[in-house]
Image (cartoon, rainbow, N blue to C red):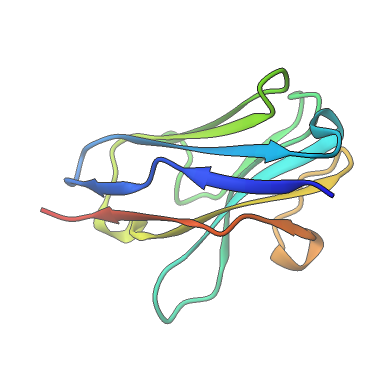
Amino acid sequence: QVQLVESGGGLVQPGGSLSVSCVASGGTFSTLTMTWFRQAPGMEREFVAGMAWSGGSTGYADSVKGRFTISRDNAKKTVYLQMNSLEPADTAVYYCAARPGTIVRTTSEYYDLWGQGTQVTVSS
């Protein structure tokens, strides 16, 4: 069974940058579609970005397009989310989620592998 562990969250000022990572252990990472979701207090969990196992298919939420970049290193079993031009509205717990396959879906119910989350706070 694959386990996912996120890291890299923290406090950053508006306009700043932050990168979060998700390392997978166990199982076969290279066949997983990897995604990032986030959940702010009192809000539903929302899709942020996703990348299919081959890296050929990616997707982003409209709210982060042009600011966030997802990437993966299959050899390191790691997926990254580089976040630039951060805004207070980006404040949330960021979760890594995965499922075997080649399709990036934006609904959280589709994914059955989840990390514990890492807090990202954008504030001056």
